[in-house]
Length: 401
Image 1 (cartoon, rainbow, N blue to C red):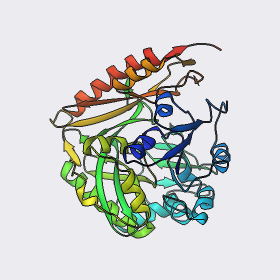
Image 2: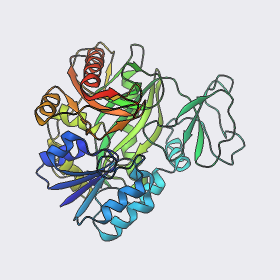
Image 3: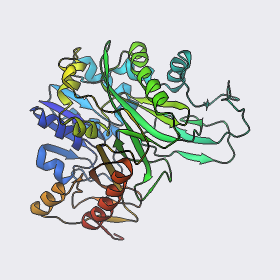
Image 4: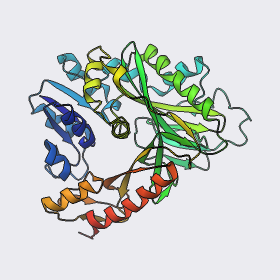
């Protein structure tokens, strides 16, 4: 049996089950639709933890007997914890040494800059000033304060008066443009680029307002005036560089900002990412088996994966677009009580991560996820906004307890 671990494992479990793997999951939420698919332990819903942690996640895993483990966010930020499974030979993902290097921001930026690939100017703790400035000089720079071992845009904010960051944080140039990501599969030597997505940040009701991750749309559609061909060409350069340098295995996703003149690369997420669910929908297949085999050193049958458009010029351009959006609580609240039939109806209507009735949410915390398919990026975003509004009404209610 394989075990799945991370903040949210519902989509990962769905992919594994579709590929006929026997799995058990441990995540923070233990959502209702997840429970219908496989056995899952939710740190908040089953253990009653108000603020779940990676350490608590690993304590639960220590009590489970399994033959292999696939992890998702945020375990890529904890190579010392991943090392325990690597030493036992049951890790199906990137190991301690790979994570320590790939998630080391200065080293990651140096690897790309040596290949002429742009990364944002970044100031680290103990650094007096940036070593170099982007074209145009320092006068117009805006800065982001970011946790160095963060994820999902949590804690990221614009700062008016930049200063040298304290330990655990970094100061990074704000690059205006479209947040995006690209996902590739690798066996540590060879690789295949599967697709790219445009990220939704802030809130689906007000996208681009803030930096918190709120979903994706596949494929990546860029605004009119952006050089889509150049963006695609630069994205295709990334997998061979990153695999060659870090020896990445399995599914990996690299985050970047698409601008009018190209890309600026932010970081690598060396694990299964949220956008994989949309790539699978677009390809109409499960990638879980491909991930497992790649981690074991083989890209077996990858040539059978359908080729997807990578970068589409224009947000109104026709095509087949697949989107997902995280629905956030507007204020303090709790999950609605739902019978099994209601859960099934929500699922058929494109709602995922349906919250357990014991779930409590503070304002800004996730309630559920919605999926949509449409004939353009703009139409897909409209569908997601409508879906999100309806799902919030059906899954969540405000309360003060």
